[in-house]
Amino acid sequence: MAIVEETFVTPQADEARPYVDWPAIFAGAAVAAAISLVLLTFGAALGLSLTSAQEGQSASIVWIAVVGGLWLLWVQISASMAGGYLAGRMRRRVGDATEYESDLRDGSHGVIVWAVATLLAATLAYSGAMGTATVVGQAAGVAVSAAGTAAGAATDALDPNELLVDRALRGAPGADPIDEGTRNEVARILFSAVTTEDGLADADRQYLIAVAAERAGIPPEEAEQRINEVVAQAEELEQDARELADQARRTAMLAAFIAAASLVVSAAAAYFGGTLGGNHRDKQTVVAGWYRPW
Image 1: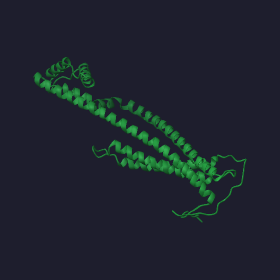
Image 2 (image 1 turned 60 degrees about the horizontal axis):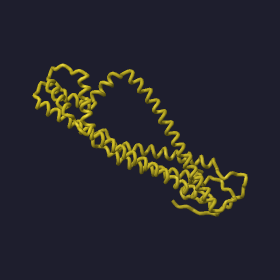
Image 3 (image 1 turned 30 degrees about the vertical axis):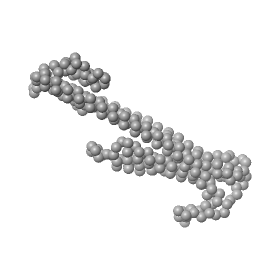
């Protein structure tokens, strides 16, 4: 985009006017917040395109975090530079400033725009999250009171730990349901087997073999094989859970680092935008392609 440099305008001294031009700052902050909202909404749509309900069709969590962080960086830089430029160009220059001092004040207005917009976004995000949490909580309360029993039964049916207990204690066709106390005892033994360094104790192993053999009416050797398979599956589930937790930790750390870096870089972009806007204001720069509507 071409620009045309025109004559330099020397401001008149006005000692009664403050150095900080808050109307220009609030205008720049409003524009920066609006640009951020538009670009972040567009980015959310792009982010949803990277996910899928089908297994194996979504991008990895780390890749989504990297792409989202880079997009956030671009949004912060673009919005901060635009808001800083607007504030710098609209700021009324005080006549006691040298060119260096004027550039510094213009850039400082850009940084203040960045700070106001950042605090505004944080406030809106917090209030929005709290409001959403309240609405969701109320809706959840109604749903739970209406269908709590059914939801609890469905959750138990999908619990992988409960499934392991079912596989260990699966009886012959037509066998009576096993009592809840025995189920809880077997679940605690399996949990201890995968969370302790010693693994499954020999006494617990023999107990599980005896219960499985009696329950299914099978020889102890076959019951031992079943218990070994269940313990191996429990260890695999526990390892998968640890890997998912570690991946979530690394992803959250990466996202937090990129977010912090984007804030620092966007502050510098706002300073640059404010200085550029002030220079264009003083030189009455005309940006080619922007015309009056009349």
